[in-house]
Length: 97
Image (cartoon, rainbow, N blue to C red; front, side, top):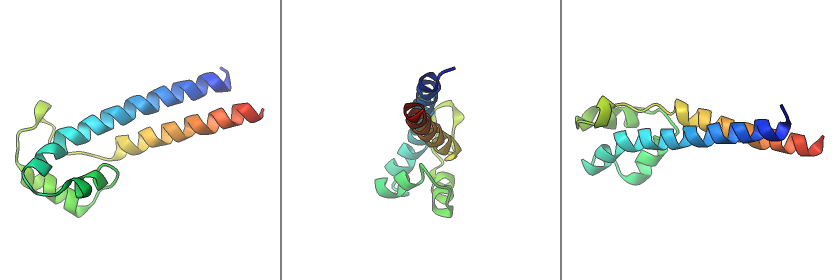
């Protein structure tokens, strides 16, 4: 497999994972924001981190979320970013060689 092809595959997987992570975050935190447990700026930070304030806001929300999803984990977000960074690194490496 060529470096360009690997780079494109990593980019596609990373973009898909990032979209899924954003959708997952939105399903959980739109109700948290709507109920006033935290503002947008605080909720956006929860997309990439696990903190007590994020966990507390999710626990206090109590709203019924689509598909029964009531918690969020930033793992998919970080996996997506790692895949996108891997895509950039592979692309740069294939240009050098």
